[in-house]
Structures are given as C-alpha cells and as structure tokens.
Image (tube, rainbow, N blue to C red; front, side, top):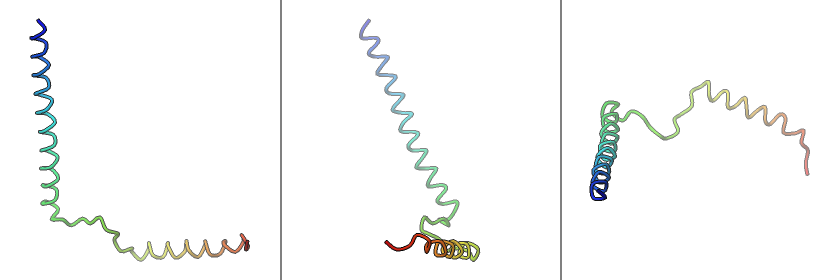
Length: 74
C-alpha cells in the first residue's frame, strides 16, 4: 500500500514539473512575441522631457530656491 502512495506522489510531482516548465516557456515565448510585435520601440532609458515637464521642473526648483533662504546659515 505504501508503494502505491509513493507512486501517486511521483506522478503528481511529474505534472507539477510539467506545469512549471510550460509556464516558463510560455512566459519566454510571450515576451519574445511582444518584443517582435512592438518592434522594440520601448526603451528603459530616461526619455527627454516635454516642454511642459521642463517648465514644471524649473518652477519647482525656483520655489525651492525661494524658500531655502528662510532656514538661515548654520
């Protein structure tokens, strides 16, 4: 009877491994398809700011500079 339960557990592990490997293969294939379909138009590097973003950054830096004088010198 113990041999039967070990055999069932072995078959279960077999299916679990199949599910894991098929999932990994599907993930790799899916990422490759996205790469091909988008023709690698995406980039992880920092992109250049738009005029609106540059203006907002300059305004924020001006505000910091304006209120930075209140702290005084140490």
